[in-house]
Image 1 (cartoon, rainbow, N blue to C red):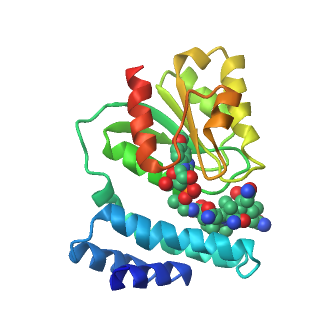
Image 2: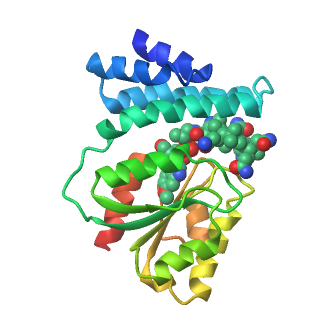
Length: 212
Ligand code: B1M
């Protein structure tokens, strides 16, 4: 790995929110592509954090400070990831489902979608089904994008689709889902229109849903 990416990886692992933005800038100044910085330096570090948590070596506070460092780095990387194309590819309402506070992946998906010309309404985390329904009822979205990182909150993706159905607006929008525990099989099972395993494929999926 490039030394600067190793430093960035270590900074995120150690939760150094102060030095992380500077390291992202250094990597950019060295001419490394934003996607390589993101995948090798940043997402890889978060995956390592998750592994250590699973093994009982890290606890919630360590995960939290690593996440803060990641967010600080992402803020610097954002303009380089989101190189705008022609605007108004479609309107997307996005959020992490009810009960779930993980937002790094959802934020990345939103950044790339924005960069691809989509207009984003980001409802944040812990979003109740009714909030998505409200935006759809107001006619403000073509696509509903749901993220979940916990097996225990995945059922709230299904609950959101049911709420859209019950409100009679399911036919007005496409629903796409994603997040580490989510699969294509789950998307099929709950009647979502699409699943994407990562942020760049989420952009391709959103484009194909708009075409369809
Ligand atoms: Co939590 N956490 N966490 N956590 N956390 C995981 C998810 C976990 C896998 C860790 C582990 O055990 N290995 C585990 C879930 C186990 C499970 O359900 N199977 C877990 C747990 C258990 C918990 C708590 C329950 C811990 C506790 O309290 N005992 C708790 C739950 C809180 C809650 O939500 N109610 C909790 C809390 C937290 C923090 C708050 C400390 C923090 C989140 C901070 C934040 O997000 N602001 C945190 C973190 C940081 C993680 C890990 C370490 C990293 C997640 C992350 O940001 N990854 C995570 C372990 C891991 O994932 N390896 C873990 C980087 C991010 C870029 O990837 O989010 O997967 P990801 O997004 C990807 C794709 O999934 C996809 O694109 C993104 C970019 O490529 N994607 C989409 C995501 N959404 C998409 C939507 C789409 C399409 C693609 O379309 C709409």
